[in-house]
Every structure is written in structure tokens, then in C-alpha cells.
Length: 206
Length: 242
Image (cartoon, rainbow over all chains, first blue to last red; front, top):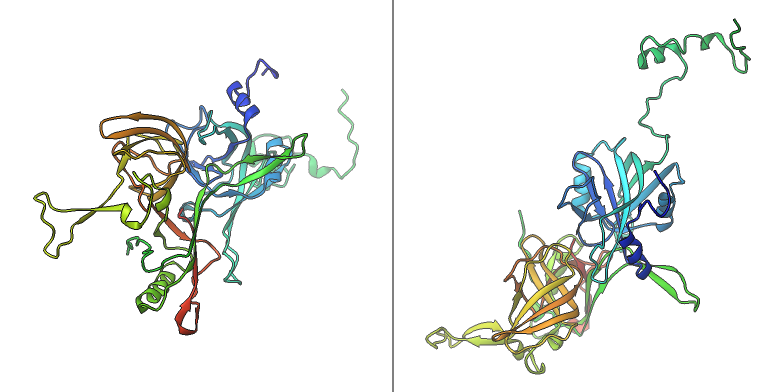
């Protein structure tokens, strides 16, 4: 994959729009059987991730993005495990999440953005900026102790950019038993029990 | 049981002050050479908020205070929604300058010019308008056909009754074009916020006391806060329903 001007990862009309305005929509897509498509904002937006979403997909208003620095970490792809939270999730979205309690583990996540024009119309399709793997999510509604303050409902989703998934089986590594379970007949782990730590094993000489 | 959505009756709760806004979240995005911050908006076209303060129920009738108490029972907790009329009378696109509420409505008799048997007549708004072309969800530009000789200048507030989301209020930000027709004018206008739901041609556009489905701002409530001789000055703060 060529890197540089000849490969348009970000379409030129998007870069042109971003030169003039800082009005962007941030989009989140969790690839469940019925994908959860959220836009950070108040209004539903009909938009799609090219080649993934079908025409007519509507990204639903998901509330306010809570923490921008966290998102920057996401976009730079430096964090191995990133948690991000939504605040003010509308009751329907929360219900949709809670009713099904979907197994998010291992589902694909796309964070992307699209610039808006003066009338808040997306200039382009969603430009995917970060792809991750969902690990675990939790919904939090702390007990309301002070009734003069609004009760908050937070949804937190732990996501991964690397290989630190809890979806991997917690096997005892390098035991023959589990290696046989994974790859029957493979004798790669046959011998480790015979060794102790820091033992120097000389390669076979014939 | 599905409850019908009521409309806030401002005749029973006359406000001393109204505050209407379409708020949008933005973050500061670095400073330019002059030291001014640039704004980055990431939350889209905004959310309607409205606040009525200085509501004097008076002592003319206990019904006013009862109504305030009842609205509190309906709305407290911020779950149930209510249609809130936005008092934009003065900036409504009336043919002549606004002088009183009487300018907002006209009465019409039956087609043989007879009134009802108590001499009252039908009531209808003095300004009628409709959507001139289909527009999709989240559209920021729509076509409005305004009947009569009224004109739009921008800044007017109107509402559209959507099939699913109910009444939603919008404000005109830009006027792209105005095309005079027979007894009407067709405007292409930019609106804020963007359409909450798709509209089709001939949907009613309401410029007179536009309604918006709203709920109590989280964290606020409507206490029955009265002084001696039942004097009260209530405050109700609304935000647009989800």
C-alpha cells in the first residue's frame, strides 16, 4: 500500500473542507449483527462508512462526547486498551443496549469523522480513522444521592487496538495438553515440562 | 398506557421573560497568531433550549396555581415531555408589525357567513406556510412556501409536526432564494438545527406560537414556591426531548 500523496486515505474534498472549517461529526460503529451506529451529537445523521454500511444507514444521536483527549489517543492508535464513555445516552439507545446485552466481545469498532458544511451537512462519507476490537462494555448509573443534580447514565466500552483481548482463551501456554486441544497432533509443546527456567538448550547437532 | 402529549398553556402561566436558544457544543481548538481561540464543533447542529422565568400566576383564580402544580407533577423528573409554545410572536413574519396577540389569529365564519350559535367563529392563524419540497432527515436547507404577502428575513422561528418525533422547532439562519408566486412566496432557507425527521411536500410549517416537544432540563424541577398571599414567581427550564 503506497503511503503518501498518491494514496488518498483522506479524500481530497475532506482535506479541502477541513482547511476552512472545524465543524466535524464524529462517528462510532460497533459491528454487531445489527450494527450500532452512533454519531456524537443531538441529531440523527444519514451517512455511511463506504464499503461497509449500506445506503440509507442512519447514525443515531448518541449524546455528547465526554473526553476529547481520549479520542486523540484513539485516533493515534497508540493505546493498547482504550476505554471511552458516552454521557447522556438517550433512553432508547440505552434500552437497545440493555435489552439485548449484546456480546460485544470481538466485534469490530470503527471510529471515524466527516466534516460538516455550514448547514451541518456531511461533506463526505465517514472517513474511518481508527479500528479496534470491542472487549467488554458496562453500563453505569450511579445511585442518585443528590436529587437536585441530574442522574447520569454512562456507557463505557473497553476497546483494543492490539492483542490484549480478553476474548483470547486463557490457556496455560506451552503445555502439551492445550496445544493438542488447539492443534491436534502438534508436538511442539511436548517437551517443555522437561525443562526448567533459564535452561540453555543446545540446538541439535547432527 | 401511552399518554398524550399536552401543550403548555401560557395563558394560565404568563411568563415575565422568555429565553430561547439553540445550543451547540464546541471545544476550543488552539489559538491563532492574534491569540484568539478557534472553535471546533463536534456535536452537530445543536439542541433547542427554552426557559420561561418570572411566571406570575396571580390571584385571579386558583386555577393558575393549580396548573403550575399539575405541570410540575407531569414534568418533574424530566421524563415526560410536553409541547412548549415558543413566544416568538413579535418576530413572526406578520404582514404588519406585531401589536397584540390578536394579530396572530383571525376568526372565520362558516362558508355561508354564519357564526356558531354563540356568535363565535372558527379561529385560524394569520400566517400559513407549508413545506415546498421533500427534505431528508438532517437536511439543513428546506423549501418553505409562505402564503400571502408576508416576507421572511431570517431569524424567524417555526415548528413542524413530525409523524414520529412530534413537534420540533427550527430557526431560519439563511435565506438562499425568494421566488414570488401567486399569492405566496417560495423561500429556500437554511435552518438550525437540522431536520429531526424527514419532511414531505405540503407538511405544515407553523410560524405562530411554534411548538417544540421538550422536557424539563435535567437537574431542575418546578417547586410550588409561594409567598404570602399566594404570590409566586416560577421558573421553568426546558430542553428538547430526545
